[in-house]
Length: 108
Image (cartoon, rainbow, N blue to C red; front, side, top):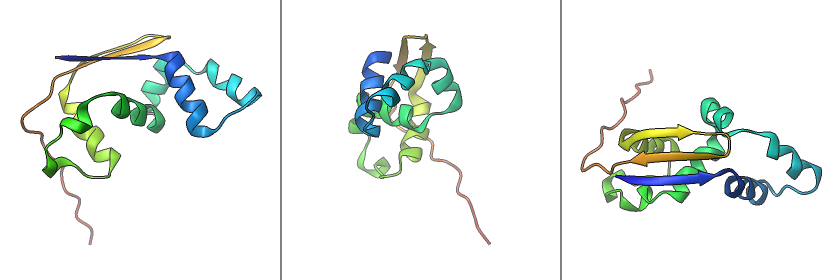
């Protein structure tokens, strides 16, 4: 079982760098809470979580695709416990030998 701890300050620094925020814009993001970001399915939070975890580097070659949505789907299968607090998030996950692939969508 692996544990990933994400601190709010580290995530805010990531956001400021990623979005190139300065001045009042940078101060505005300090009011955003982890519970809200988690519940809303923030794409930037998911990107940060995947970047901070060792999950992507442990995937077999057949699962490595550039699509973050697909990798997030695989990561969600390994998550065992999540604690979301106002100032930090703790994710406990366990790597799998095999992962279920998502259903295929057929278009007419």
